[in-house]
Amino acid sequence: MATGAPSSDIAAAAPFRPQDVANAAHRASVAFILDLIQIGRDGRHPLDALLLSTIVQANVAPISGRADLQVAFADADAPPPDEMRRPVSVNALASSLRLPFESVRRRVHGLQRSGLCRLSRDGVIVPTEILTHPTYLAGAFQAYERLRRLHGDLRRLGVLDDLPPPSVELARGLVPVRTVARLVSDYMLRAMDVAHTEFGDMISCLLLLEIFRANTEHVGATLAPELAREDGLLDDRHRRPVRQTELARRLGLPAETARRHLLALQELGYVERRSGGLIVTAYALGRPRVVRFAAENALHLRRMFAQLSQLGVLAIWDDYAAAQAASA
Image (cartoon, rainbow, N blue to C red; front, side, top):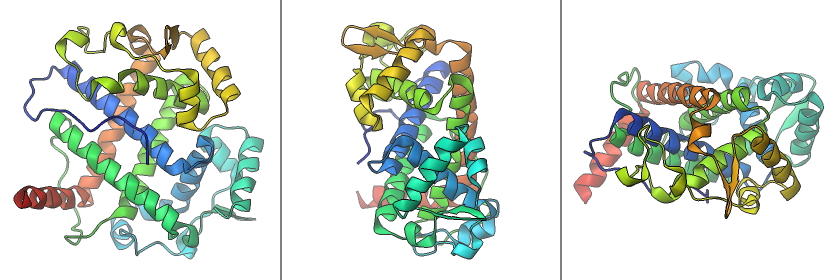
């Protein structure tokens, strides 16, 4: 089960300031990204989880761009056949993730030895037999439910108003887990690309996000006025430090790898060591690179939910919520 923030305590009619809403939505989205990586990692190195997600997304790019195919291959029993998957080269994967070619080549061969992908002269695919395996489907349903929870949190914050209406209609009662998986992976990879642009290598990005999450997850989705600064950020006095060993455990990293990257983040001024562990300070969160990441992430998040609305996924969730309310 993914680690993450506790269930939302967002009140439906709380009089939030714009900065409170933006900060709460950003914390929720960061927790969501990290939970997705935890779900996809399944005990592996986080770079392997990102690599697998990138391969799958590249394979199904022809499907992701067409609403009719998103609908046709929506539920768990409707995986696209291998002949519809577009192979992706190792070089393209390395460029997409901004990782050294040799590192990606080595990881791809490791994934192939584990039976998780297939490498040929045309490139790499994750075959249908993997995407219909019970382990993959269990993770896909976990991610589906995690996104549905994020949707509820963001709706209560009011940041998902004025989404476009559905342009297609999914069958009521359908669980479009594969459609959601494609859109979620696209969002996650876009968010991580922005993080990499602003903060450097991928492991440092993940550590920075995990520290940020760990520092604030004890306060819930929204901040009590006495905990917040004027800009809506949590006051540093109330940030809960996190130890290096806990960060390594959460991300599945070797202790030495975590230590090396954390030292680099401290030298760059993004992380400070306090009694009890590490924090990302409010000052660091106000730096231009962090502000740009939060703004770009918000755009990509809204883009994903706009697509979910257009494909009728949110209508299915609204029907389910209404049925649950009526039953209760």
